Length: 242
Image (cartoon, rainbow, N blue to C red; front, top):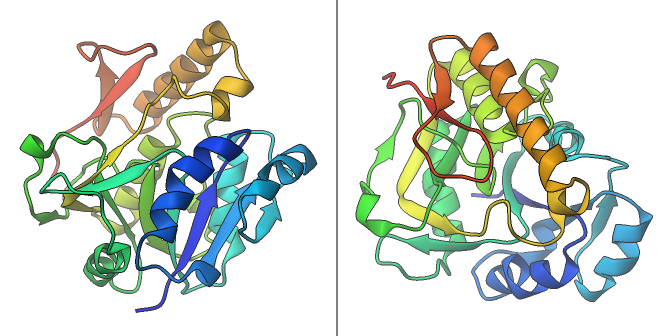
């Protein structure tokens, strides 16, 4: 099964080289199918250390960059999106080397349209080992979709883009797919570069709160504020919907 890989990054060349790029190089993927999506010419210069084809998106924020990727590939293209600071693991807590096998399960599970993702954490105790089609978060760190170029599926918020994307696809197709035998190791909110390079902690908090407020209002009944999760910033929880 053929698919393309889009790696999104911003001001993190050394983190990308140490994590996502290293993982890809040691995996089963065809590196000629991997494209690096950067923000600007400064990124382009700094990422010369990572030997991947580059696309400059002229995107000032993560929303615009994800939307650029959303509309970049021809309709019908299978696309796996990866962030720059991740390590994928499987239910045995081993680093995923056969990314092709994971992608094949994901794309076969959604068929000609839709979206699939993996567990948004690395705690294998909570991996169900199942492929589910209920309303579960398709985390931005790693997700696959079939390109439609449909502007109605583009995200609108500067943060919580994965929650918004999950809800948009759920409303459109009636389900989202999760491979709960895979998960991701990463450091949300604290890794250098990325959004941390563009916002102070206080400004980032405002961006997160604005996104939460908007999504709770727009998708009433499907998502709510998560008041119990310990986090630097406001968080959300999805409703239990089959």
